Length: 57
Image 1 (cartoon, rainbow, N blue to C red):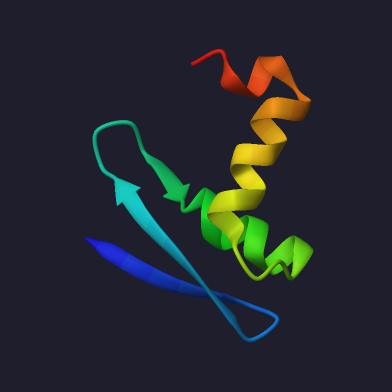
Image 2 (cartoon, rainbow, N blue to C red):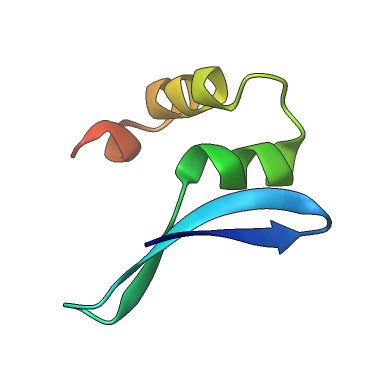
């Protein structure tokens, strides 16, 4: 079930995985909150170009 978490009044989508007992967060939402970028998806793409390890998956 998807949940919305707030961080400094900004929304971050998350989901709880019962099987492994972990919560997963939307990377785009976290990037948006941390960087205040207008386009978090584009920022993630640029990050992958800057650091090859981020693109290894």
